[in-house]
Length: 446
Image (cartoon, rainbow, N blue to C red; front, side):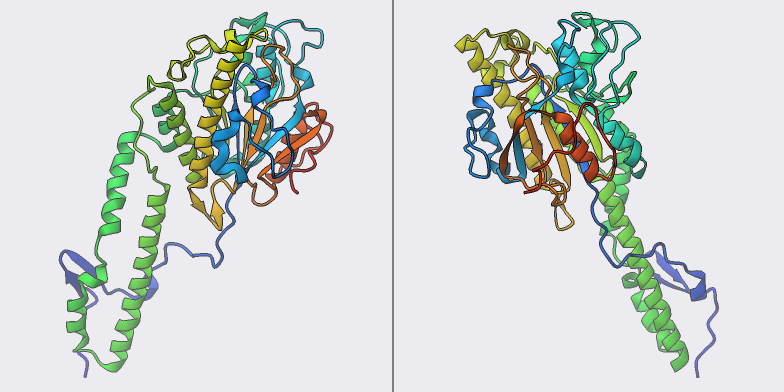
């Protein structure tokens, strides 16, 4: 005959205790779906300044068998994960009667496809950029609708280029035709925006670590449970087994939730500030963007590698002349060689980012497979200030909707906005038109 057990009875072990209330009083923390949800699709837009040395940028052959030119050599590890695109143009980056100021104008046009109003006053005007159109429709799904990053300071007022406001030269993301989105250039500030106070993050990380390494509660109270079971009748024995199994189920859900918490904590430590070494700085900001995508804190980002018209020097690659100054090379071979070195440096940084995205497993593929990453700008050759033959790369398979591993050459002066409209389609944003586009960009899917 079984003995009566008080409802205040608990199973104890090494400081752990499991009470014995009615099982109905316990509610599971969450219901697990039977199917793995489809990963989200991300978009990022990288900008480079001052055009490129076209001779070493565009492959001579099209299709999958193209030979990468010198500037694109560092993309070899991710060759099959990207498209090299030629033939695209931005008509609204041309003067169209507004005179000089190509750097500021092209920067404002890059993601908007609109002619920027020539002014250095408060009456700036361009258009809503492609990233912000996507953020308006999809941004509510993440904590941050979009993330604007950069690696060079930029004023948002004043005259920076032949009567064009500095806002045009500094920002590529526009929330409205009159509201450019300022970029964040401090890595620690980016970390705080993404994940909160770094000190609190450290405490949370310690708490989750302790939870993941703790022993099972039922393992700790197991001996007490076995002792109690000896005094129970058959019915109570079954009831106790059912109860302990329910506790085990809930415990597994708690542990799963804790592991989920751990996945959403940043794997990197909070940066202290802006590194003095520019290559280190660029890669730190890229690491932050990878983590932002990985934790689904945002799905849309812009990344200004340097402001349009930047005159940065690159002594670590033996280029001590200013970038903008060199871009007005006049055909000088020494200058064009240095431009090629700068182009190659920036591509190497993008290659680093793409490889980093590819190294993160997600779903049946990788973070890169679930992304569309545009790299380029709205100036072709900095010496000519032309706005066709734009240097454009598109990395990521966009969940199988882009056939990568090719050089695709479009008809001359095909609007870059056609690419952006096609990208919006892929993130579920249906727009009839965008900027000065003439339609969708055919040929992205082979």
